[in-house]
Length: 91
Image (cartoon, rainbow, N blue to C red; front, side, top):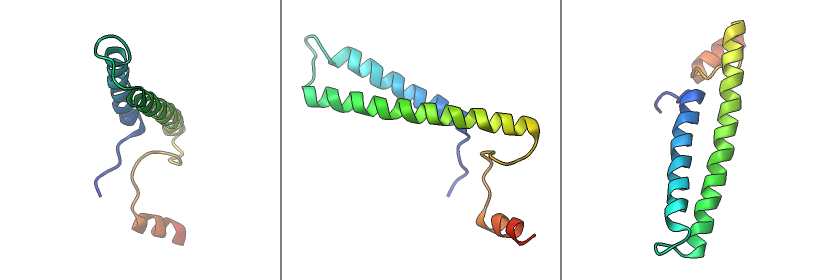
């Protein structure tokens, strides 16, 4: 598996996806290019899910930056392997 994406980067990527959903809704939820209601409802639901995920990652990024400022190392989004976890637990 590749490295985890930092929380702040996740916020940015999800925000871009939200913007894409908002544009789709603006273009296709009414007028001559209107899509079927079930598609519109699905896009609204997808957007709500993305907004919730963005907010969750934003809170995680805030916690991570506060933890980094204190230097405790707990709660950072730095990837740790299972072997590293075992070594820490053995101390």
